[in-house]
Amino acid sequence: MSNSSSKDIIKPGLPRGLRDLNNLELKLLKNIISKISKVYESYGFEELSTPAFEFSDALGKFLPDQDRPNAGVFSFQDDDEKWLSLRYDLTAPLARYVGENYDKITKPYKRFQVGSVWRNEKPGPGRFREFLQLDADIVGSDNYLADSELIMLACDCMRTLGLDKNNYSIRVSNRKLLDSILELIANNEQIDDARRLIILRAIDKLDRVGVSGVERLLSNGRKDESGDFTKGAELSKASISKILDFLSIDNEDRKKFISQAGSIVNKTVAGQEALKELSEIDLLLAKLDYKEEVLFDSSIVRGLEYYTGTIFEANLQFDSSNDNKFPVIGSIGGGGRYDRLISRFRKDQIGATGFSIGVSRLATILQMAEFQLGEPSNGPVLILKMDTEFDYSYYQIAKELRDEGILAEVYVGSSGMKAQMKYADKKNSPVVIIEGTDEREKGIVTIKNLIKGKEISTSIDSRESWIKNSDIQFEVDRDKLVSKISKLLNSSN
RNA sequence: GCCGCUGUAGCUCAGCUGGUUAGAGCGCCUGAUUGUGGAUCAGGAGGUCCCUGGUUCGAAUCCAGGCAGUGGUACCA
Image (cartoon, rainbow, N blue to C red; front, side, top):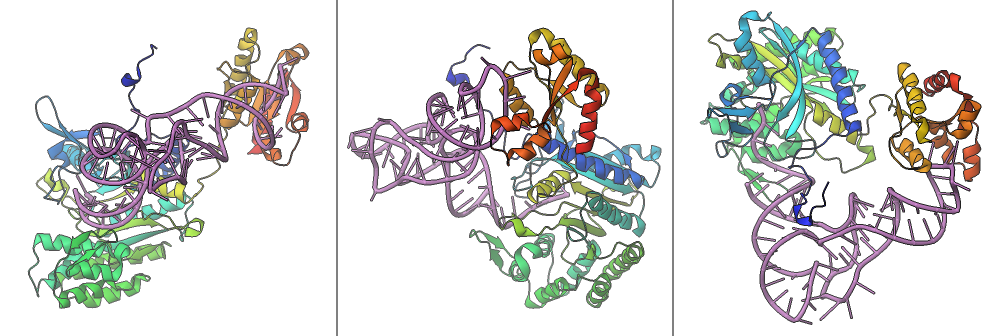
């Protein structure tokens, strides 16, 4: 508690992309997590928790960027010099867990997990270096049911948050469709890994840069609005038009999508498989009332490295009536089939498919859209501290209220009554209880209804009439206090 | 990583063709109201003008370099 000279004072602050979460923000996150977890559980997913960091080689490295091999993941060395990394998603730890416990697990294994993950990247709007993910994965099923189930699950998660079909969409594609297109192009020109990445990334950017932007990325390159230049794939005109044809497939209607895509990719085995899988999903979903919110979309690419079949992502859209400065934020969740990931730990191939919701990003978007997830809750009832010799009496009141399940606190500061009222106001207390000398002599307490007071405050001009308003402030016998308060709180809800 | 913009009070920002004591609104604190949240009125606290160096008699203001934030882009397992 000594006074330090100004040189000793540390400037408080956090590294970029990290943040504190206050009571309100945590409430929102917890609310989202509990609602979605319930949906996951209702589908028979079992919860798993794994550590925040593991051996780097177990987490694997799927970062294709050769220029900066250390970017992306936070890593450090153990005392035996083994490299450890903070997890960057929940799927890699799952693969390790399954590889380690394969014989004990009931297959197909349906697991859900919630936890923070860390990525060492430049943060942006809705994008942090520490954020929450909420994953559901199915390991040990290689048929379309598992993929379809995750798509239905994604829809149900959006529905349970109160979002409707106009607010969200699930866009589905299949890695084999893209493989097929690349195969078709490879007839005309050499497609190596580097070129393949550039092409896939260009396709992925359709919604951001538009058709002409994709065209530029496939040919010479594109300059963005800040003047920065991205090198293109330098494909031939014929190849580019083939890709653009593929991207112009009708994605408003799943049946149309399948027939139009068929005419492009039918000549390849991969294409035929993709169409079969998409058709199966379509048939099942259509029968179960998952219709216009689930779309097939040829521009969906997802992560570049490990997906092998069905891929999908969840997007939110809100009327931008409240503004024009709504920054572009990517999808709030996504997933797909990754049949090869677990084979890093085992010799046999195990089918797996998963879905991940970016809870932090979802919460950010809901906040920006001013979307309400249920009623805002009240703070605790405040018992004012009037006379020190009766402190015990205030705690008796608090205890009686808590025993009834009512949130209650005694003011623990040293300020006067006015400051205490302000405190109650700021903590969103519904009610204040005053037991001063006057009240105690009469065996009563004064109750002040802050919610009602707030409603009336705009229309009232004199301080006197505000305080004396009997709706806002009234007396009640001390022994009827608890029942009165609980009646008051129930009626205000 | 690349390109742009910004950095002045707790917050939002004004001031910037260099000139003495750096401002506003909101918020915060105190009082009018000795026991009452709002409104009103009157007071008050709060600043290394991001940092370092340069130009100058003189820099919040001009220049250079850093750092931080932000937007776009790249990457995003």
